Image (cartoon, rainbow, N blue to C red):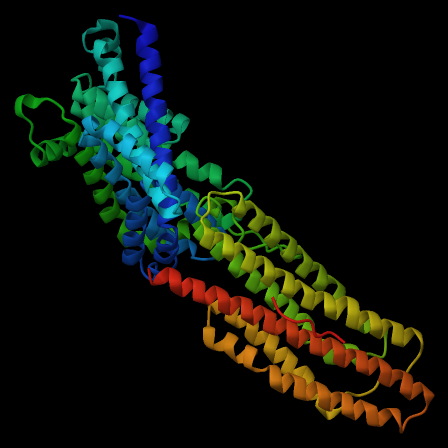
Amino acid sequence: MSWFTLITGLLGGLALFLYGLDQLTRRLSTVAGEGMRTILAKLTANRFSAMAAGATVTAIIQSSSVTTVLLVGFVSAGLISMQQSIGVIIGANIGSTVTAQLIAFRITEYAMALIAAGFFAQMISRASQFRDIGLFLMGLGLLFLGMESMTQATNPLRSYEPFLLVMKQLETPLFAALAGMIFTAIVQSSAATTGLVIVFAGQGILTLPAGIAIILGANVGTCVTAVLATIGKPRQATQVALFHVIFNVTGVIVALLLLRPFVSLVQWFTPVEGGATSPRQIANAHTLFNIANAVLFIGFTGPLSRLVQWLAPLKPAPRRIEPMYLERALLDVPAAALDAARRETGRLGEQVIAMVRLFPLLITARSVHELDPLGPMDEDADTLHSAIVAYLGQVATRDIDARHARRIQDYLELANDLENIGDTVEKEVAGQVREQLSRRLPTLEPTEAMTELIRHATWMIETAVEGVTTLNEELTGQVIAAKARAQELVRGARNELSRKLHTGDHRTVQSVRYAFDYVGHLNYLTYLARRVAKVAARKEKDEKRAAEGPGEGEKG
């Protein structure tokens, strides 16, 4: 026996398997990204639909680890609640069994054909979707090629006594489960563990009870990925990972205690002549265990949610604002990451709306201390703006298509326009109010038209932001159509101020000049509100197209 050939063949085959699985998952995540976001965000109304969502998404992307990491990101971002995530985790374990069923077909003779078809598809096609499909086929082919390489490399071990003696130690269920847990934690892929078990079982090296025990251990080892994903995340993410650990560990303990009847069930469900272990038995054992575990736990989502919340209670919210939705875990799924950026842009919009609502108080302030709340609000808006821009930059470095690239540009424009609204209020308006107060000039009560202009500008910004956060085309259309009314109010306010210039004393005239500037700033705010609405409307049309198969300056 050539140990060099055996070890390199086994490790090389494992590397091909893992790389193929990674490509498979990445391409499916890219192609199905919008669907994943919709499923996880909308189909979690109750525990059963949440379980179905978790199973569906995991079956699509072929990785329960990716689903769980995404789930940590969604919960951290506030897209779904921790209790909703419990059903998704339960379903994800069921969906992960599709990988084992796929591997058990052992259609290795088609590996080269899949690699060739995928390679030429992604080389010839310029369309990003066809390139993704080509890379998906290549990943599938590499997965099967890796399986074949591991099978060929380990073939001599069938008659190597020392190795067979070691494998006999795996007849002890606890030892086998620990081996599966450790190996899965190292390679961070339960599918790789399942693949090796299928290889050894198919060669008669592993018995069915040992193979099942190893796969049970792999269910615990896969929790490591979710635990690592919670580092530096909010406590809600820790709660998700903690439930994942409790769910898998408890289910594995129950299965190990009932291993003999479970093995008999698998043998009855998948009979094999001669009592040999078949790849299909291993795959079916994996599926049956996860379905049984889901049935056992799905009725206890409420108590389990309270348990993990007790074990990992939420920390008090930070005093200063922090990004809520921009989770790194979502970056590998551009659709989910961009949706997170949209939600964070909505939070930025809420910050600047709060600043705009202070406009009437600012221009009638009698003391600079009345402007103090504005500074921290602007700092919070700047914090969110910087975080959104940085996050979008990270999304842009991923493998994205042209539609995602357009959406990144749209979100950058939205974030910049919203931040410009905040800067206009804090730097321009408040700056001139401070200057007016320092010159001891009297503050004027807003005229009737100016008061109405303030209300109109505030409404336009509020409605534009709501249109962004709710993807409501009707609202953005209302803002765009409000231009004529805004310009009418600007003219009326200026006419009223012009009459004051001819009736007041010198100090009043100076104050009126400042009031003219405030009207100019309000005019600019209505322009920025329309810009936000136009970009949002453009994005809404892109969203609709996906589901179905710059402007003039006015400041002064």
